[in-house]
Length: 564
Length: 48
Image (cartoon, rainbow over all chains, first blue to last red):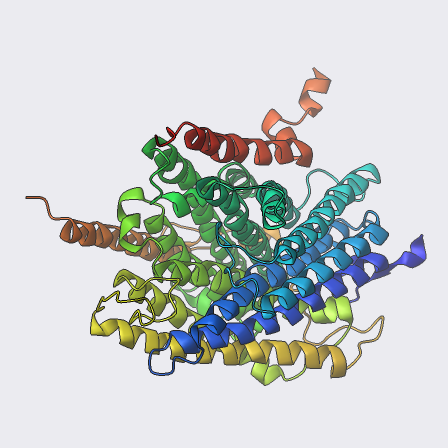
């Protein structure tokens, strides 16, 4: 049994070799599907740019379908399965449960993802990611998603099995680490997500085969969003676990309060999935009680949890930096962070972008009244490019730079480009999020190929001229983000193929794992009566932005529906 | 008395048990979102 483990010389982590092989396979598959999805995303962005308008209508919908599924589902879930195996087997120092079944799960996911790409490319399933009935895709479209989901569900239960093994073999004492707890949160949400997907996709498959006469479109939307939106909540939980991990890796930071952070994750477990209701806020069949309880009440508990994480992660970094001597003024700790280290810069841009852009816009969309201002407009993709792309994708990219030497024992190549990559991708995607939200605020629909409504049989609507400008700026931002995304793929693939091989006992210089400040170093840190005053100022800026933007949208609503 | 001192608080025991959390994390949204939502839909009167 002992020969099935190795000890990482850089981190001291005990790594189960069969688990390592599975993590590598899932991580590589993730990057491949990110690359495929990114290429589709470039074509979507260039088609939305009115002056370019790259693709004809049928190809646009095909491309939009493929883009959504490859990046929102395949890239994310493959990476998250690798992450679940890491936070269980590696962080708890135990063997992975049933690696052979792990390969079966991986095989199902690969077959599902490839089959889905094939069937979408045939042009028979351009139903977009949401695949709302009665739009009908080829049966293999639904089957491919079911195969992928079954594989992912098996991966989740292997994760839970690994937790049981770690407890039974006493490889850790007390509670699991906070990062592992974040993984548990992600896996629990994944189970709800996949079960919801099965409840709706299996009947839809039977409907497409002719065995079921009819699927109620409202019931489809309700249950599908239990799958479609909750899948993004897996990403949120996973990327917040990654934030905590990177704070510990880069700074040796320890959570400000384990209890508070765990309670915040518990709020996610209980309430994050029901944010799915915000997709149904304009549906006439659902009562306001149902909509408001799930969004304006219960969802806010999950929002509060996000704000807790958004405070404690930079707070823990600030405390660690101050403990290391960077204790002057409000922001010396922030100025002296390693901005050229893509693991840190990617994580920090992820944190700021997720909070300021994704978080605030999510709450605005989650209020039933002001939701009508932007429901089903480009504001929605603007919001989720801030949460899933700046938030999750960038955090996963940031961690990958650290995982390559740890798991693959290869040195990262093109370090100069790597230090710029999070900025290219992060700022490009910030532009995408902002400009799409701007166009959405002007009413530009999210699902239409052409904002002039040509080929619609006479629908005439003129959007303000600024909409064209915003979509052009979105196109330019897409180009910048694609350069950043391509740089990531090139750096990682080149590192795996050509990066210098690291010896079994060789340590990287500089070290990739920061030492933890001693407890005594924390004594007396802080300024102005607070241990983490810089983080509190950043939180205050966040709250002011949040309140201003929230009330601006109520002002828009008042102008839209005047009361006389 | 000694046993009481060694037993972790209830909340910690809940947080330390992934399967209780799994039950809660599936049951709460299943009731509040899926079941409540389906009940709303089936209670919509059928058009005459």
